Image 1 (cartoon, rainbow, N blue to C red):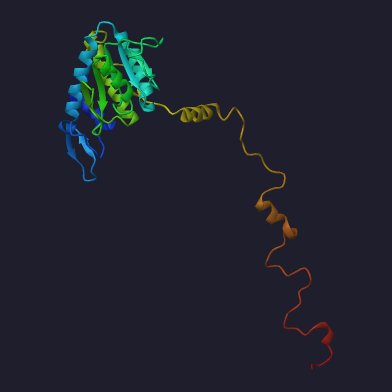
Image 2 (tube, helix red, strand yellow; image 1 turned 180 degrees about the vertical axis):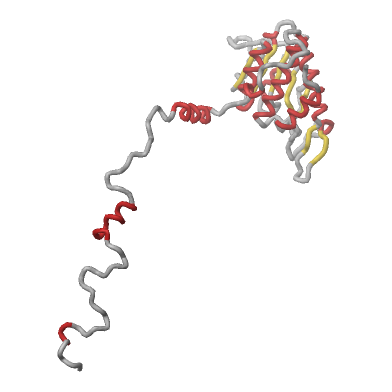
Length: 266
């Protein structure tokens, strides 16, 4: 059975999609549910879900999926953008946006898309500006403090967490496939959200080293030739005991000295 709106909202709560920032743009106030004691603005997830559905219908309305550009300069969104493009056929531009991509017709990378999707209106500012010059509609993931200039459809959500960004692109890709008919609504999508999560290269290298067992080296502790502390204490002083009398003799300290044995005193 296909997932419902309530189940999608529960997934958003787990991925912290509802957590905004301490600041709020006056145009984003309509999407804010309330404010916590700490001053964090909570985003209305019902409106987030509705805007995702609107964005999916915009994507489906474009006949050629290659006419859609999905951009993300934010590293956390790069993997999600590539995965989203893989399942929807869109054109991904992860990483740095080359200035003039939509306006400079001389360059080889010049593109004329019919729709632009960005992960953050602030970091993808250059892409938004060029889209406004070329009259290209823009869909953007907007946090509570995001500027809405040149944004046509704002999806209110936390666009700073890697789980949140990944889930939003996953939900968008799934809805696009439902609307296109490539995936029937009667069955759930078999692709996991985890595949959209951004992975830190250093963490991946550390994980590979762990899987390989540190390059195949055997780190089993070998017995040392010098022995350990227990062996040294046992072997010291000929296995003597602290209670045993000293090796120099069993003299009593209260007895007179050897040279004064017959002196009779001072």
